[in-house]
Length: 188
Image 1 (cartoon, rainbow, N blue to C red):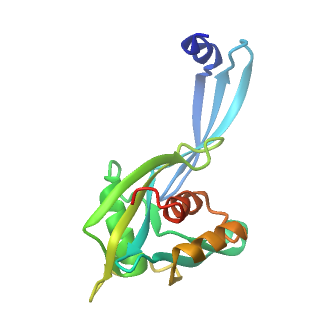
Image 2 (cartoon, helix red, strand yellow; image 1 turned 135 degrees about the horizontal axis):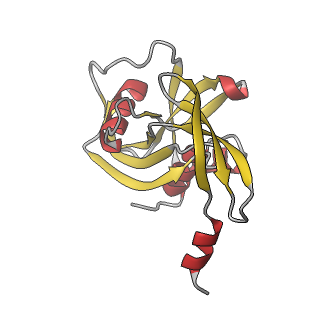
């Protein structure tokens, strides 16, 4: 089977694009597209600058997680530290170093990239770079986080992280991926 032929036959062509909304972290677009069968359709999508997330691991092998309220789902979530790239073209490594400090008050000299992921590819081009940070240690005077962000930091063992996953207490995809890496000792 020639995969390239299939890919070409599935491609949609943008006929027009209208920016409907813009704010500090995204743009909402409505596009008219030509489908592979020649028909036309609309696509509503979000243009996002990208983000990075990190699973901080302490020298005693505990993961640092955060709890925060997420308005879109009206719920308190358990997540890894993460944030959007503040500047177009910002390096994911620099983004996670900043978020690690701002959200947990920790730093690490041993940060490795795990993978990239698209969080909501049905309606957004957001790409999240995922990292692990080992031997994290607390900073004396960390940078403070965003004024509108209220975060509770806590630590879990490998076993406790596995239990959170098994009980379905974590629904955030980037956190699930990184905690699975931790629980199954991938990248050790």
